[in-house]
Image (cartoon, rainbow, N blue to C red; front, top):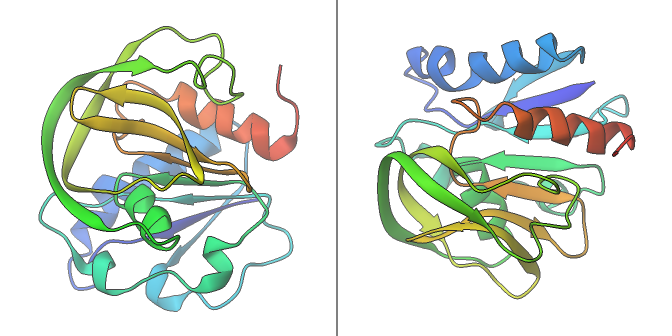
Length: 190
């Protein structure tokens, strides 16, 4: 089962429809069961969870920045994929710092040398990703940068855990990221 963590501001339920629901639909369409929880309700990870996707949120929604992930989430050994604010949160949880970085719209994304060999991105060509963020985080040496845009890292992977981050929103035109991530959670990588 895939756990999707909702980072949206709790008093704006419309954000769930825009940022969390598309991920649930994609993962369900790819044949995986999904469970959803809001970050504020997260206390433990169920043993049946094989992967975690931390959904992004709206451009002006910074609620997640003052609600750091619990330490067990940052140290999870099951695969994690943080999307936009989710990427920011997992890197901040590993001593990264939030920094302003406004990107809106389709941005060219180029794979790095590491990105050409990682299971999440291997075999893909450079592509465009839909960006909608006003922050990124500093990337510590414990992360490999798999893809970049002109403004900085767009896809990263933790060196000591199966944790990934995508600063853009792959639910817009790049659903293959979710498909590859699900293969990683199932350990059936081609």
